[in-house]
Image (tube, rainbow, N blue to C red; front, side):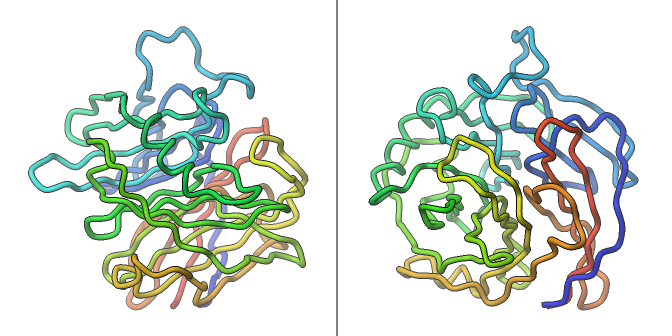
Length: 291
């Protein structure tokens, strides 16, 4: 995999960025402490700010009470209109056990009431000193793949369940161990996910952050993009090893939080990545990736 830096995008009003998706050439961005989803055109002009909780009287939330929106994916379930799934990290039980779905046709938002119960099922798959910290979600065929972020003391884990778990309760969760990730000699954790059906590839972003738990922030040593290949045929395996990972701690500042595909150029792909700058406005960058 070859990763080339195209340039920084400077969108209007981007207050925070932790998850990103593209649908019909429009860009959806969520921030971990923000009460709305940003909607941008393909030229990065702000089209709308879609409020997540219409009756809430806040735009941002402080760390102790924020929902910690960290994972987002386009959801396609037969017989239903496409939806945008946005989920909290679950890194603080109850307060961060939230998920919403938004119709990509009407932009109507609904709270997923069963997800606190679903998160508890996922928590039962944790071992030793692991903590729940969902940072990436992607739909792979008829399955939902969740990337759980590790830190200096705990490793990364991948959870798989039926995609319909996003709209109906499921207690079927399969655990996959991820090989250790390393950036600049430091343990790294997943921060985002994107599935490319055309190549059956699950891309991930990762960051090496000097923290020993799922709640506290730490100094960011660097970020990276990697991928797992042939993933639709590997959802019942016990272990995954990335095919390739490319670090770019010397190119981009901030913690890279997520990625999505913008467009294809022959056998190359233009991706959009977003970064969280811990209190400062989020950033967006275009990268060219060649597998």
